[in-house]
Structures are given as C-alpha cells and as structure tokens.
Image (spheres, rainbow, N blue to C red):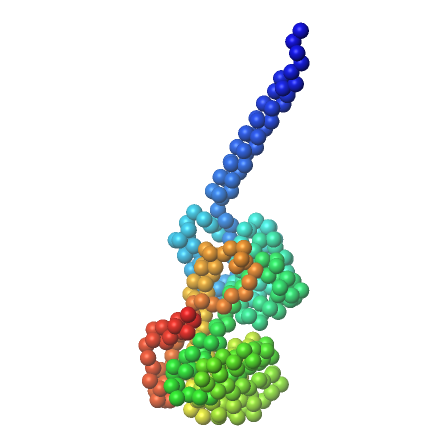
Length: 328
C-alpha cells in the first residue's frame, strides 16, 4: 500500500500558483511597458486668444515637440470656450494655465492633475490660492505651482548700482501687496552698500505728496510691481517726478520703459515660455507644488533717457554677466 504523500496533493496548487505568478508578472510587465510608451497629456488653458497668450502657448508646444517629440501630447482650451473643460481636466496628466483668469477657472474645479500657472503675478497667485484652496500651502499640497511674472528685486538693485556708480540712495516704492517685503529689501540694499529710502502708498494716497520727498532724496528709484497699486495714473506721476528731479527709474515692464523709465527688467512672452518648458521637462515630486521666480528675463534700456541723464550705458551682456556673478 502506497504511503500518503502530502506533497503530491499540493502539486496542483503549486503549479496553479506558479501559473498565477507568471501571469501576474506578464500583466505587470505589459502594463508598465504600455504606460511607459504612453504620452503625457498636457492641457493648456489660456485666459483668451490674444497675442501674448498665444505666443507663450505656441512657443511652449514647439519647444517641447522639438526636445521630447515622443513624450507629450497637447490639448488647448481658451477660458471663454470652456464647454468640455471638466472632461479635458479629468483626462490631463498636467495642466498649464496661462493668465490670471485661466488660473481662476481651473483652480475652481480642483483637478487631480498637477497645475502650473504662468503669466500671473505673485500677488494674484496668492489671492487665487487662498480663494479656492484656503491657503497657499494647501494649494501647494494639491500640486499647484506657479512661475510668477515678478522679477527678483535684487536684479533691479544690482542694476541700479551698475547704472549709477556714485549712487547711495535707492528709492523703493511699495504698495499694499508688497509692503511686507520692506525688511527683506532693506537688508539687501544695505548689504549692497546703498541706503534704502522707502515709500509705501495706498490707493487713497496722493502720489505726488508721498513719492516726491523720497524721490528727491534718491539717486535711483525702483517701483515694485504691485497689482493692487500700480496703475496708469501712478506710473505717470512717478515718471513725471523722476524727470523733474533727474532721477533714473528702473521699472518692471516694457510699457514703463517706453513712457520714460531708464531701464526695465521684465518677463516677455518668450521668457515665460522658456521658464515653462524648463519646469515641465525637469519637474519632480519635489518641484511640484511651489512658487517659482523667473529664471529668464528681458533687459531693455531707453537710450534717449540715458542721454538726457548723461548716463553711459554698457552692453546688455555686461549687466547680465554681473547678475550671474551675484547669483553664485
């Protein structure tokens, strides 16, 4: 009589287990291969089809297609034609909002995909984050990021020192959204060997009465971008008073430059596109959910204002090289 062998009894189970494990491995391998082969879907949501938004949109697409042609596929929606926006957001792996209005619309839907907001000011991003997520930290936790238009003020201060070599007093205008930065800016200006002269104004203030005393004591004047303060009327008075006192203005937009500022450091649509492409190509779990300063920038001068103020300008590259050295 044959002895009972429990291993023989278990043989079908072992064979079944081996078959199941092999099938599972094949399934995982196949799915992994398919996922790796799948293109990431980037949804662009632009505030409107105007020139600046379209330039950013097209430039980002062209650069990504050139650098990683097999990695991405694109979908574009304009905010004023958002018929299937919820479905588009649900299908997206990444969402890029272009402009403040687009960010407002997308944030309100709270999509699961990571969001990158561009062509937006730091203040506008903060306001929208608090409006839709409760706080900026909560927005970061929900994988919402931004590349803000606001250039680092340190670039303007470095430029001031280079443009007006004998400058000592640097006038800085702050508004409601930027006044909290005064201690930080004061420390940086002082460490640069200059004397800070601050003026903080609100929408209720008379620009002449507030700005002129500070501007008259300054060798160069820097208005800080503040969406809650800066308007055409304020800019007009800044430039009028600077001309009267022969004080150069270092501004943050091309329109300011054309109106009479000596220099401007700002983000052009091409700069915004470069920053966006860099972020998308290099984004990781550590960079998703953060607010970023622009790495790319445009630097332009008003030659007629320089001649009027008897300021000799160097080449643009001269100033850029100094900025790079300071950043190291």
